[in-house]
Picture 1 (cartoon, rainbow over the protein chains, first blue to last red):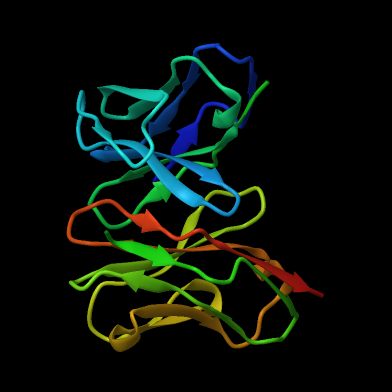
Picture 2: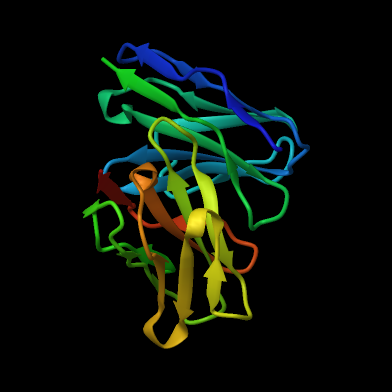
Length: 111
Length: 112
């Protein structure tokens, strides 16, 4: 089974901190994604990547950046965390543009 | 723009009741449709998918969904729910090789 591992399950950070959320997949998938999940808003795409060193903005990229230096790793960066970035962050990967495998999520609280 | 909408935000059922969760998509062309489920504390996982062919698709755990093109709908059904079906359900769509777009989710609570 494909596994998508997110390094932290829960994180608490202070406003203004730089935050790194890490995601690693073990099945050589080309495509990786970062979503945030909020009650009543569903999943919203922040950034995605179809290849190493490649990144594309999703629907809500403001306040975020990403890094993909290796195929298996896709990092989400909050340059200066704010309270409105308190959310559940989900990483996903896919080999073809159809079936996504999700990680367990990182619940980030910014205080 | 393509989108999916889920009008039921929270559904509460007793065990053995039948379930139907609504999903409507807005896109005039070919669309792939999915239902994902997120059990409490677990990751999102695929329940079922529709690409083409038989509009009635069967997924895991006794779930099924019917693609009705004329109604732009892809509703999820289960004849008899169990307490273990308590979860959040997301409808998702995809056009061509583009990314998935998700609905806002429906929270299902099944009362024993």
